[in-house]
Image (cartoon, rainbow, N blue to C red):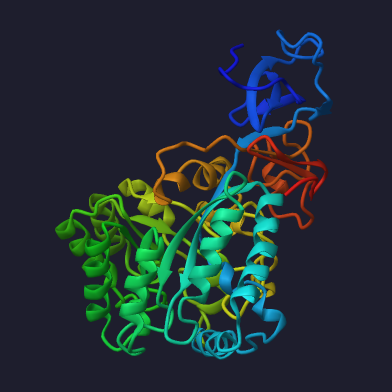
Length: 444
Ligand SMILES: [Zn+2]
């Protein structure tokens, strides 16, 4: 066991934890907001050596629960979280989702955005997520109020929750004159990536011209909503691949949705997946939204409106599942849980952990560990981080991930992956914010 220099005494010990990949039980010592030591559980002393006279103030017996690095939410809109409480999307169409949100947006204030965002952040933290990339809307309607709120949040939550900000033109750029200038200002204020939504603008290619130009000006990456249909003819991703390579932005471009790729024939999917991998583009499936808004034609699509994750992984692309929304016109469900946010009722209560691609075969033996990997290991790359998981950890499941532990434990029986009720779950954020009661944060 080793102690990091300059770190204070042990304040708390989590006993009988199990590493995500299996292995023996261990004790985790926490102090000063950090994990200080990991010791074998068997025969472990009351506190790690070197703390005589300063016994741990608290012990928590995890009884074999699995411990994972904190999850990373790679794509989420906190500024429109919980807007479903004001007006739901009864048609379930993308057109109405955009129209309803635009109408509600006219009345929001910075304080309103901040309050709803913090409510969502508390949910995310409770469920073990400790970093997130926010899509922050910037346009002539909301102007920079969302950006100002997000910047305040980033400072207020620093140390507890890491936030990246994408400057996102939800209403288009050219069809909302003035948006480009506001985006440029938002990047100057502290944006981490330039967002885009080419399918909601007058000229999608011109939209991409502006997005990549702003990325070049700011020296930042790009994060797009892209090819969000069931139409196999929607192949804007090919243009994005070419632009990414031409701009030398390999590894710094992310695309969310990409459902039209799943509608193509297998040969085309494989070819385009290869282009995506070559360009180093991160793909973010957003199934809770995709399953709600897509597939509403008279005949259900064969591909179920999901991103073809298996093909992307085979090609070597980085894939990271994300929530996108919590309860608004785009996604009427969600509780900030990357493991098990409820999907819309019409999807039979499947959850992201099982409705995601490993996804198309949710009961296959390989699906559970892969889902865990996409949430806690590949997300840092798509969120622009080289760290594998940060200093925060998530504890969930019970007794080695048995009954009720879905998508988080290598020991989880597959038969439990579709059950309805969430397991008791605890989370530790930076060793400070932690839960003593299942599902309830003691400090956030
Ligand atoms: Zn989104």
